[in-house]
Each structure stands twice: as C-alpha cells, then as structure tokens.
Amino acid sequence: MSPSYVSTTTTSTITTASPQTLEIDAIDDAASYVPVISSLSSVYSASALPAQEGRWASLVACFKQFYPAEDLTFIARSPGRVNLIGEHIDYSLFDVLPMAITQDVLIAVHVGDTDGKLVLNNTDPHFPSRTFNVADLKDIEIDATVHEWSNYFLAGVKGAFSLLPSAEIPSMHCVIDGRIPTGAGLSSSSAFVCASLLAIATAVKAAASPSSTTFANAVTKSDLVQSAIVSERHVGVNSGGMDQSASVFGVPGHALRVQFYPQLKASPVAFQSDDFAFVIANTLVVADKHVTGPIHYNLRVVETTVAAEILAKQCGLGPLPIRDGFGGTLRGVVEAFKARGVDMTGVMDKVKQVFSKQEGYTLAETAELLGQSELEITKKYMTRFPVRFERFQFRARALHVLDEARRVEKFCELLAHAPADRSGDDAEEKYLQDLASIMTASHKSCRALFDCSCEELDELVGLAVANGAYGSRLTGAGWGGATVSLVRKDKANDFVQCLKEEYYSKRYPGISEDKMNDAICITEPGLGSAVVVGNYSA
Ligand code: NG1
Image (tube, rainbow, N blue to C red; front, side, top):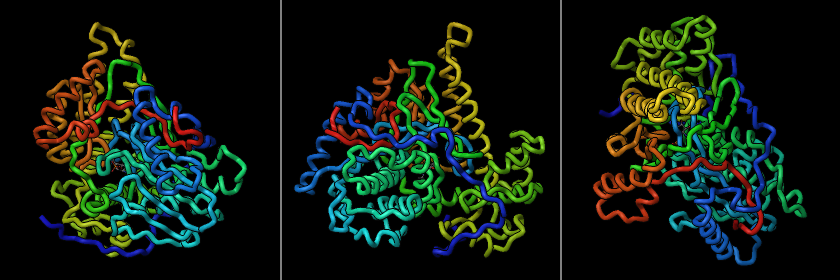
C-alpha cells in the first residue's frame, strides 16, 4: 500500500515547543582520552591478530601506492558493534546493551603537506578518490539525498568543527579501509564517522605539535561520541547514540550498558560464564537506512517521538524534556509517570488507553490528539528528516519500546550474576535459557510491534533456534542485516556450519566459502576507537 502522507524536505531548522532541554553529558569515562597505541596486540584479540596483521600490512602498502613520497603519520580506527538487546530504544533514551566487534574502519593518514587538500582514497576500488580544499571544509554542505561514500568522512568534518570550532584542519592525505559489511546492522556508518572525526582531531593535534610523535590527548571519548552522534545526522538518518557509544567506548571481553538518561554513560558488563558465545549471521539483505529512512528508520523516530508528546498531553504530564532539539521521548514519559507513582506496567496500560485505535492514526487524528495543526506537526517532526506514511502506529511502537526497555533491565540483571550462583544441577542450562528467552521475545516484538524484521531475518532466527541456539534475534535497525544468536561455546563451530548449509547454501546457491565466512562469525567483544602509531604490527 502506498503511503498517503509524504512530508517534504527543506533545510529549515526544527523548533520545539517545550522549554526544557535534556542535556546529554558524558560521565564515567568522560575524562579519558581515546588511546594512542603502538602495537596491534593491544587492539585485537590473539585469535584475530594474525589476519589483522596481514590486513594492516596491506593497508600500509596501499598507502604507499597512493602516496609514494609521503610518511604515514598515524592510523585512526573505530569498530562496528553488535547489539545484544535493546533495539530501537536508544532514541527514546532507554538503556541498550551492545558490544564493539573486531570488524572496523581504519583511516591511514599523512598530515603536514602544505597543498591545502583533504584527499580521500579507499582500498576498495568501488569507492572513487575524492579531493576537497581544506579551506572550504568549514562551510561544506553534505547532500544527504545523494548516496556518496565520502559523505561519512564529511560528517566527521562537521563533528570536528563543532568540537574544535577554531581549529584549522591541516592537509590530510588518507586511505580508508572498512571491513564492516554495509547495511548489515553492524554499524559501518557510525564506525566510519567516528574514525573520520578521530582522524581529523588527531591530525589537528599533530599539525599543532609536529615534533611530537604520540598525538596523545587529541580528543576525549565522550567528546568523540557526542560529536559523532550529532554529526552523523548530516547524512540523513535521525539516529540514536548506541552505535557511536559502542564504537568509541568498547572494552575487550565486555558488553557495554549504554545509558542515555539522565546523561550518557557507558559501563562495561562482564560475562560471568565462559561457556557461551554470540554468533553474528548476516542475512545478506542490505538494509539501506539512507534510502528507506522515510518509511522505516526515520518514520519510527517520528512515531515514538510523537507518541511520547501525545501521551504527555493526554495524561497531563506537562512539557517533556527534548532530545537533541527534536522532541519528547518515551523515557521522559516514563520518568514523569514514575514521579507520580506509576510503574512501567501502569505506563503500558496508559499507552493502550490513549492509543486505543489498533489501526493507527492519520495526520489529522494526530493533530487532534496533540492539539496542534498538521502544518505545525509536519514542520517540527517531518521536515529535516522527511517521512512517508499512511497511519502512525503509536500504540504498537510505544509498547515495543517500553517492553524492550524492560528486557534490557532483565538481561543486565541476569548478566550481573554468575550461573553458579543459582541452585540445581542444571543451573547453567537454565541461565542460558533465561537469557535466550529475552532475546527471542525481543525478536518477536521487533517483528510484530515494531515491524522492523523481514522474511530472511525471521528465517535465520528460526534456523538458529532449530540448530541449537538458545535464542536468536535481529540486531541493529533490521529490515535486513544480521541476527545475533546465543550458543554454547563448544557447539559454536558446528552451529556456524549448520547455518552455512541451511541458510547460505540454500538461499545463495554457489556462494563462496570466503563470502560465507564474512557473513557468519563467532564474535568477541573488542576494543573501541584508538589511534595507532608505530610499525603497525604486533
Ligand atoms: P544500525 O544497525 O547501524 O542501522 C540503527 C541506529 C541505532 C539504533 C539501531 C536500532 C544509526 C547510526 N544507528 O543502527 O542508533 O537506533 O538502529 O536499535 O542510525
């Protein structure tokens, strides 16, 4: 069915009705700078190291081919992430539980020439060379309607100028090597933006002190995250902050509980058992948020934001704190109810009462509920990031968000205790089943309430469970991309083999072993962003 409402794109700024602004300040790790590292063994796990050494050597060789006369000053690195639980709730300011993965974006940089150019080359020949005058960068416009690879670097440029307003970006000659599959729900875009911003901040620092070889203290992790969150919106997606947080704050061997309320905070979460592993399996259906944003991702951000504003209005909660200049959040609604003694179950009941129409709401009906004109609503929520829809599904979207937020709480509670703390011979088994049932419930909710799954994701989830996974779910935005499955470590290799046979070989006959190995892997939680200076080996 084609959507009956289409909002238009303009570049006008969004104004908000509420007088309050929710400040997102990083705490916890706020004072810590992105590390500067001199050996790859501090970046990757022992099992990932051999392949990574070869890859870094190829990048250095490629750099020499592009720029034979130039020294490689440093390499900036930011990883992708897999989200274990907490899908589509970061932009409603609820906690999420991702972890950084081994796959990453590397940017090899030469700083210091005086040709006044930013040159971007890519190890992948599909991405052609791009050159910009550094003098033009401050006012550069990013055309989000065009799918252009260098836009992600330019988003990093925007972030760098917001972070270091008086900085002069020096000449930078770069080679980019990205190994996170795009559109796989593993956050290749955020890794690219974070690595770009880090590369620029480090280049500014390097140019300011050419005699130094350490480039330490170029940018704090929290500044990098917060600037990257805002600047990534320049490429046309009204994103939350989970991906940038995971990419920058990643801690080897740990998941990260990322909180957005009342302030941004990332806390490492250890796994209390060595017996399980997470397997990422890419459906190989590319989920392109930039193309489908108006009917998928950006529309969900509008639906959850407007649902929050309507709940506040209809339940007399007063003005909600505004997230990033956009609108109120369901977290704001939950906090306002909490102050009135209403718990999460009570809030979910209110959602069902206020949004009693299961078929959804037209723009005219939405205007009536909000007490605002259709034009006003369009201007506020659908102008910078245009959307297309027939009816807003406030009820289903809000119920997913609230229940998913509860699932994150439960999952984290389970992870806080070792399985051995439980009684009974089958304590470990029960523990894994409990974790898995939360993942499975999350997938069902993503499919039925948030409508962000697809046939291939559902098939992979079904095959995962049929082949021994305790639980499985889509990870990331969905509508394609990857699943994450919880499996016993000693069965993980067999599990991978089963999915190769039952999903990849059947769906994609003739698929090469290399392609399958890129598509499915046992993941290890890895280190976040870093600058590497030295000989680029272990
Ligand atoms: P991916 O999987 O990278 O498309 C997106 C958002 C996250 C989060 C998830 C859904 C961006 C950069 N990332 O992730 O903030 O909302 O979807 O949980 O838009």
